[in-house]
Amino acid sequence: TGTLKPFEVHVRAEPLTCFESVVGQEGWRALMAHAERTRTRMAGRTFWNVNTTARGGGVAEMIPRLLAYARGAGVDARWMVLEGTPEFFRVTKRLHHALHGSPGDGSPLGLAERALYDEVLRDNAEELLALVRPGDLVLLHDPQTLGLAPALAEVGAGVAWRCHVGSDLRNAEVARAWEFLAPGLAAVRLAVFSRASYVPPQCADRALVIRPSIDVFAVKNQSMAPDVACSILAHTGLLGDGACVMEPAFIRGDGVPARVSRGADIIRLGSAPARDTPLVVQVSRWDPLKDPAGVLNGFALLAREHPGLRAELVLAGPAVTSVADDPEAASTLNAVVERWRGLPHLLRQRIHLACLPMKDAEENAAIVNALQRHAAVVVQKSLQEGFGLTVTEAMWKERPVVASAVGGIQDQIVHGVNGLLVRDASDLAEFAAEVRTLLCDRELAARLGTRARQDVLDHFTGARHLGDISFLIEQLDA
Ligand code: UDP
Image (cartoon, rainbow, N blue to C red; front, side, top):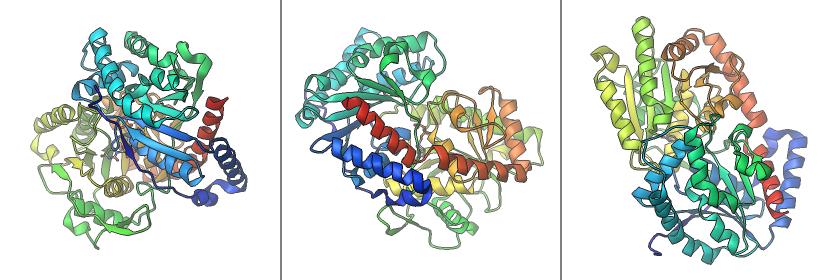
C-alpha cells in the first residue's frame, strides 16, 4: 500500500471584480456578502476539492475556475487529484455508466470490484489524511472519490460529495450503482446533485441541488473576433489555409497573449473546410453516452436526404490518452472511425474527426472556443447527460444548439426559445430535421442564439455558482 499518491494542482487566485460588470448592482452586493461570510467562516481552515483527472471533462473544467475565485475571495481552496490504476478506472467508468442508467461494458460491480475500489482509495488516503486537518471541509467529486468519505470524516473533516452525473431513470443499473456507493454515501454530511430528480432516497434528507456553471471569463469563453477564430482553426488544421489571415493568438488567463502552436490530429478524407462552409460541430469526450457515432449517422442521413445542403461535420474531442479517468476514449473513437470508413466517399469528405491537443490546457481551450464560435450549429446528441457544459459554452457564444432532451440539458434549453431539443435522443430523423432547421433558417438561429447567451448570463455563470458554494459551505459547517 501507499504506492498511489494524489497530487495537488495549484490554482491561481482570481479577483472577483470581473463579475461586477455582468451581475448588476444587486448581484454584486450579494456576491460580496457571500465572499465576506465565507472568508470569515473559513479563516484558518482549508476547503479541499478532490477528483480524479486534472484535464478533460466538465469537472476538471469547473473545479479550477471556481477555486480560483474562492482563493480570490480569501478562502484557502485547494485541488487534489487522485491517482488510479487502469483497473480502478474501469470500475469507476462502469459506475459512471450505471449512474446514468446504462450497463456500460456490462462488467460486474461485485465484491471483487469493491475490493479494488477500496484499495486504490485507501492508498490515496494516506497522503491526503496527512494534509487534511480537523475542521477542514472536503468536497469529493463524482463516484471515483466517494469511498474516501469514511476515512476523512474520521479525522474530523466536514465531508460533502458532489455527484456530477445522474439520470432521471430509476432502473436496475442505477440501483446497482447506489448499492456500491452506499458505504461512502453514509459517511458524508451532504450530497450535491445537478438536478432534483438525481437525488437517491438514501440521502434525500442531506441533499442539495446545485447546477453547474461556466466561467465566462476563462480562455474557453473569452470573446474572440471571427478572424481570430478562423485563424486559430486554420492553424490547428480544422479549416483550410485560406482562413488564416493572421498569426493566431489568444489571451492567456494571466493576460499574456500566446500563439496557437500545435496542429490537431485529424482523420479526414478530403481537404479542410473552407472558411465560409457552415459547420455542424460537437465537442465532447470520446464517450459512448455522447453518441459520436449517432452524430455521424444523423449527419449522414441529413446529407443523403438533402443533397443540396451545404454543411460539413466536425466531431472533436480530446487526444485519446489525455483524460486520466476515461478508459473508453480509444475504443469509442475507433468505433466512430470504423463507421466513417464505411460511408460513401463523397460523404466521408464532409466529415472531420479531430483529436485536439491537450498538453497546454489554455491552448486547448482557445481551440475549443474558436470551434464553438465558428460553428453554424452546435450539437450535443448525448444519450444521457448529467448537465452538459458544452451546451452552456455554445449558448454563451450565441450559437444555436440542437441537443437531446436528456438529464441536465433539459434545465438549459427551452425548445424553440434558446435552442432546439430532440425529444427522443436515439431518433436520428428528428435530430437531422432539427439540425436542418437551423442550417436553413438563419434568422431563427440568430434569435435562439441571442436568447441563449442571456439565459447563461442569468443562470449559469460563476457568480450564481459561487453563491451556491458559499451556501454549501455554510450547511456543511452547521
Ligand atoms: N472539452 C475540452 N476539449 C475537448 C472536449 C471537451 O476542453 O476536446 C471540454 C468541454 O469544452 C467542456 C468539458 O470538456 O468544458 C465537457 O463537459 P461536459 O459537461 O459537456 O461533459 P463531461 O465531459 O463532463 O461528461
